[in-house]
Length: 285
Image (cartoon, rainbow, N blue to C red; front, side):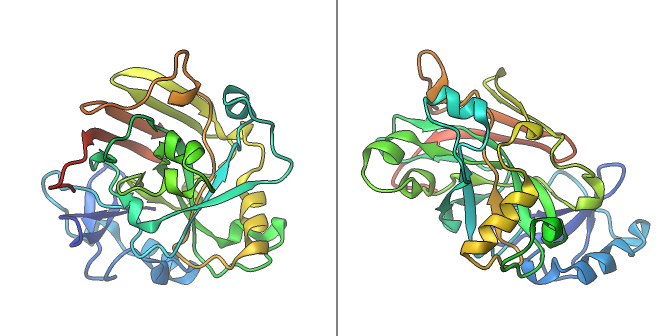
């Protein structure tokens, strides 16, 4: 299934994308797409619905974040060896973890706002993993049973805040609008191998990132198991699994986002997202 949330920000309704790409309204069956309805039994109940009986959503509504009420975002740094190389960093011997504020979450096509005075805001296309069951000390060979689905994430990053403003990476990762996610939450039955997906990101029509999840240093199952050693993962939690090479700080010379720039992202089987960059003003967001 491809689950989606559509409508005005803060008033999104739950939906399902059918085989023709049309949104079908699910609000008669679930109140929202949240962790509470991502358990295997709940997803199985939705999968059993006759799709043709669900109301068709007309027009092209705004798409919201594909999951609501995310309790935490756990990000993985330097998880592609070629990305580590472009940033002059060593490939880690264990996953590097940091967290991103949930207030950064926006819809897949919503505007990215540059923080006041920002000069080093960067892009990062990533495979997002959404948890469907409470996960604590999960063995690696059982880890995929705790995954509700996958989505596209843009782990937007202010590099000066991240590396020059003292402390951990969180302050460079957590600005408002710095976590577009979606367009859909795609259940694992449609993604037979999450370690065989192509990722792409363009800025103003120019390809900047191309990668494959097969080159991750630590794969999805490893990450779910590893993270669950250090914290309990709750249904709806998001893991951003790292980015391939081609980020702005790795360009020669380094290139960062400017007002008016357009970012387009895609991952095999997970759809496409498109964000326009705007400068922060007192009236934003």
